[in-house]
Each structure stands twice: as structure tokens, then as C-alpha cells.
Length: 136
Image 1 (tube, rainbow, N blue to C red):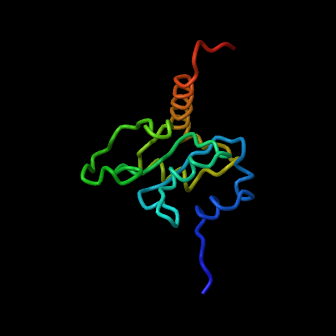
Image 2 (spheres, one colour):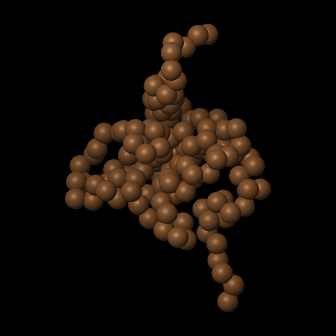
Image 3 (spheres, rainbow, N blue to C red):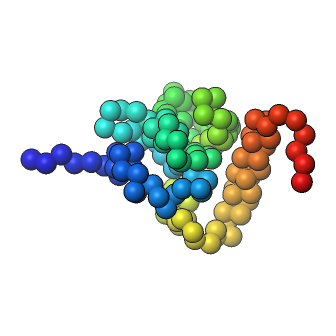
């Protein structure tokens, strides 16, 4: 029986599949079971690719990596300490964006505030990484 590669594994292995994503900011919508064949979480696997620019991640309220299973209360958004990207843990927002927003599509009005907050966090995070004052 031939081996089956899931979408994440194909994206990791086949540079041709990543071509439409080159030069774009990528946001990952994932959950604790979003892993590659070698059980690397999708966030870590995609962040390790030098040709992708991972800018944010969205996950369920119990943690993108499942680290908040015993804490089923809503947790605040944060910046991932390993990859330095904002992580939004809001299951309703993640599901809605996954279903309704695709690459190169117009952002629906109901997501304006969430996307504006995402952009603010990305720019704030980028400013922290750059030494010295920014000039226009």
C-alpha cells in the first residue's frame, strides 16, 4: 500500500507547493493535533522553513499546543516565546477565519477588528526586534 502524505507534510517536503506563499505573511490556524508525520507541531515545522514568513497563529482556547487542557477558561493572547509571533487562542475566531477567509480574498467586515489587532501585534513585535528608532 502506498504511503499517504498529509497536507502539512507535503508543504514541508515540496517547495513547489510553497511558491504561492513566498513573500507573504502567513498565519497558521491549528490545534494540538496539528502535527507532521514525525510528530512535530505545525507551528514549529512551518517556522523552521526558511522560505516562509510565519506572522501569527490561531488556536483553540485550550492552547495551540494543548498546554492548557486543565484550564478550560479563556486565556489571553500572547507572543510565542520560541518563534516571536502572536498567538490568538480563540476557537470561534479561528474556526470562522478558517471557513471564510482564503489567500488573496477580501477580509469580511466581521473580522476587521481581529485582523487590525493582529496587524498591530505583528508591527509591535517587529519593532521590538529592530534596533534603533524607525524612520519613515
